Image 1 (cartoon, rainbow, N blue to C red):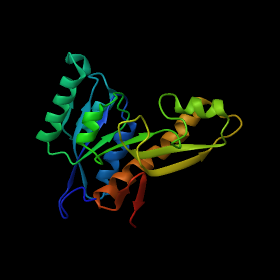
Image 2: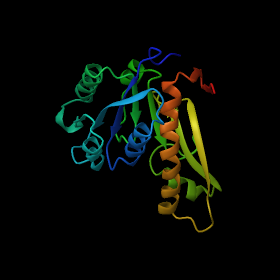
Image 3: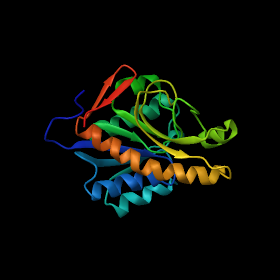
Image 4: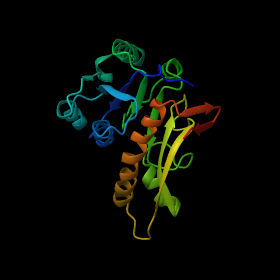
Amino acid sequence: MMFFIQGEKMNTAVLISGRGSNLQAILYAEREKRLGEAKIQLIISNKKEAEGLKYSEIFNKKSVVISRDSFITKNEFEQKLIQTLRENEIDLIVLAGFMQILSTEFVNLYDGKIINIHPSLLPSFPGLKAQEQALDYGVKVSGCTVHFVNSEVDSGPIILQETIEITEKETEESLSEKILTKEHEALPRAISLISQNKVIISGRNVRIMI
């Protein structure tokens, strides 16, 4: 699967809802030339109060707020989102703490061009409170997963996973911080691989060409 024309930058949009720590990691990776052929073209937040919006000014990036509350229907919200993505010629959409479930129609429109980061080793513990789920279940290893987005929550083909050990005294807070450190490594690396056309999707399997 070719994500962009060879020799050109892959215009990337990062979608956030909160503090934007993964966005920050991505922007640092771009500044340090660790993002391959990807160019962060646009930051989109669905919440005007999102702390992560500050990084648009710090890193001199275009940002826009598209609030779900500003639209009567979800379809109208997504049509505005699509319009904005098209106007900015976006090739790849990165969900980095974007707390809004996208419709099947939207996901199908951008099939193979939306990725997400999740704080567990999928398919274990999808959805909200993944760290709490892991501790309650008593697993000894957890981590994060970068995956393509499909029409079901946290179930798309897996690109990369990073692992951490869970100690006997682990808390939800300490586990979240340990996993977040791995997220900051995995998400920029996945973007870089995709931008260099090193990611091949075959059904549920993703092959990385190194």
